Image 1 (cartoon, rainbow, N blue to C red):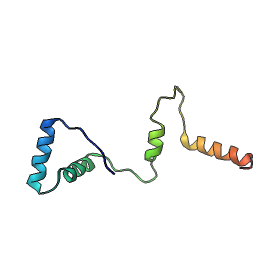
Image 2: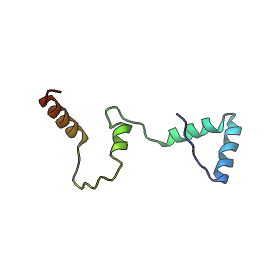
Image 3: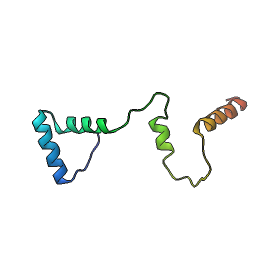
Amino acid sequence: MSSVVHLPDELRRRLEAAAAERGVSSDDLASELIADRLPAIKPGSHNALEAFIGSGASGRTEAFDIHRARAEAAAAKLGQGA
């Protein structure tokens, strides 16, 4: 995957200097640093698509259980013979 990250000039210079000291590319060092800071995704936890889908403001204020909603939609579809 490719991503574009806009860094302030000072931070970019620090990243480049640290990467040169280690003998790696800035991209590799940035990936390593990001991986070290992000928590691991636990097996069985929600996936990125579910997190994205839930990120918009729907205007709903009640709690929403995506797993229950999917099960209800699947049961309704089966009831329709689909």
